[in-house]
Length: 444
Image (cartoon, rainbow, N blue to C red):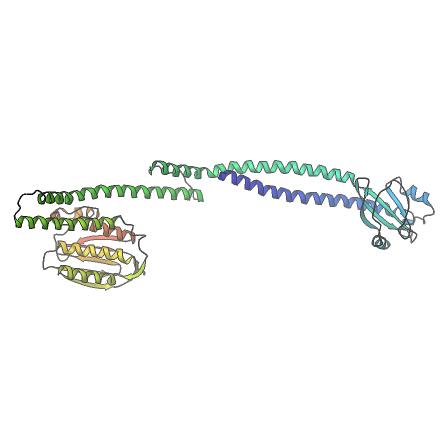
């Protein structure tokens, strides 16, 4: 069952309940008013009977049956009862009405209205006391009223059916119009699932829920398309970068497997080359894995400071490289970050500085709130390449002979982007490059 049909059926059900409630209310109100008119008519006729109410309207007491017949029988159904409620005679056609001590006792206090029947028809019956000499019961058929109520029910039913059908039809039209953007979204999602093509946005505008859903869907398609292109580009770049070390490894292995006598010093050089190529290959694979990982979801946010993340990184870099690395903290503000990812970004910056700085030079790390800058004494980065060094596999022309994959700074930018920050490059006071980043702190 489609959404449009469900909405139409729901509206039809609501309208049915409303029409039924209104119809029942109208029917009961009409029945009450019509029966009340009959009751008033019966009371008026009862007051006209001779002897009722001890001479009401100056009518003399009843003397014989002919007086009742003249006053009552030509107008309606009536019968006379004794003082103890025993039936005496009819003053017209026969009818059925209940007689009990409660009814007679109530009639002693005044005319009492009850129900009865005339043949197969309902009737209203008034019981009136005759100055202690008995009771008279006057009946009025409700056949005309029942027929009118039956006609009213038929009209209510017909009007209700038309109202429900019309409401369902209008609801179906409105639901179709409202659900049209959702139908387009469904078709687009099915097309994406079938073809894998993410470059066909859905038409949708407006600030309502459906418009926002269409906008969100288009944003999701754009993000998926961008991610797909980035993954494709990453695979292409990775395959290109992997080809060089793999070719070198294959060449060296072929030399070793050639069977010819290889001098010991040449064999040692080949094995050293293989070891270096394997090390670079391992580093490249590790960096590719880090770059492909979604740092936004792999780790929960924690309250940290840049100093507490940087100090262990610097300590390990000192032991590994033997370099002098200084740390200056101007403002150690707290921030929300993913500690492992941010530590990896800091480590990449420090490793880059150690790689490109000459032996014996000092590497300086400065922290000011959410900003971190690593200063080196290397060849620096030309202004025209400062935006390119953050791209995957890009390497500065002057450092292409040095080992590396060109992924370190790309990982830094990915981590900082996930922290809603920005990367920075400037000239270092020590003659090299000042590379770093800035991310929001708690105070920001």
